[in-house]
Image (cartoon, rainbow, N blue to C red; front, side, top):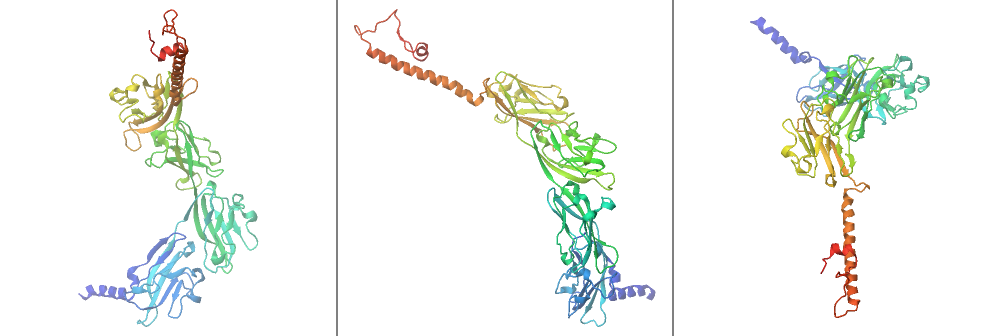
Length: 548
């Protein structure tokens, strides 16, 4: 029985006296530039008088954080951590001895230990917590083209920095510096030509260990991985890596086109880029549907969304100077969305990277002008290979349910067509080849002027489910041969009528005046040939009844 109970008893003692063995080592991962909270918790109500945070790779009398009744830190703190470490709770309530390590960098990676001493516990401080801190990954900085990018690099307070090297990892080793500073020179022949006159220190005096730089007027070719290396005067050896930054130059470019035009979607990598994969996506489509897809094995194929088949091509098929731009042909209202360009280069492992974001807006309506009696072609074009099942041509000023033209699998027009258009509208291509939903409106008249909209529904559309979607809008203007529009026709008709009435009134007045001044014989007006004389001829005859 004793053998069964002895081991649990020893374990109980170990956990009571040195409970860190039971807790194990806590793993903590943070990214460069973030703050790291190093947790250390004694028992509730503990009266803590001494807190020592150490990093095991530093010499024994150098502390990360040091607190006693007489002082906080002072000469006992390692210079790497000056002004970067503070208590999470300065009052140490409930035995809290946790600290916050600010603005971590790669060199903060290491093993940290928390030791505390309580007032009522004589002897040395005891180990409470061990933390394995790992500073992983790179800091991500995103800016728009034309802006300035601040690349942060912070050493410890009071660091006497004598060398700063900023590099971009994709540049060749003998022409590698984005920024280079030594006691003897700044930049000079060591700086890559891409960055000349564009990079400067955020603080030329490097106060508080600040080695950050400002990269001015960034462009898409500045996208890349940047590393900051520094060397201090009192630290022998080579420069140390302090910060890694992934800079992405993104831009939501606005492109506006009219229906039927071609839209060029610009995407430019750096000069000399060996592009192996290009992906153009539209953010509202499902993830495996591409606007354009190119890889070493194929172009588009089953990866391209059906809406764009036969409508998208590279601006430069050879992709010279890193050009991944595409041309989207014959845009329609449904092409208005957000587009993203992703590329992958041969010598850059990993996934494709986002290079450009474009907001495409399809604005205004197409204008069509015809004369009375002519036929008007109202264009409506979907993508090549579209399987159109429903076409609706409407005019917004008509009541809902009244169509200019209506086609479904069951019928063409019928009771859905407004009587104004019966027998006057037909498809330009009855087979709807290449997504053609255009119609011809025959023998137009002045009342046909107005706005027309074309809506279609495809059998297997990859977009949101709806009955039909708008493709094009057309403003139809019916003009007279002399160029007058519909709005002037009433004026053209009204003016002659007013002129006729005016002549009639004047003629009647003159006629009555003459009758009053003519001498009468026997009170009768003399007649020649039995007819009543008229002033104004045919005009009077049109506007006044004739007596006799």
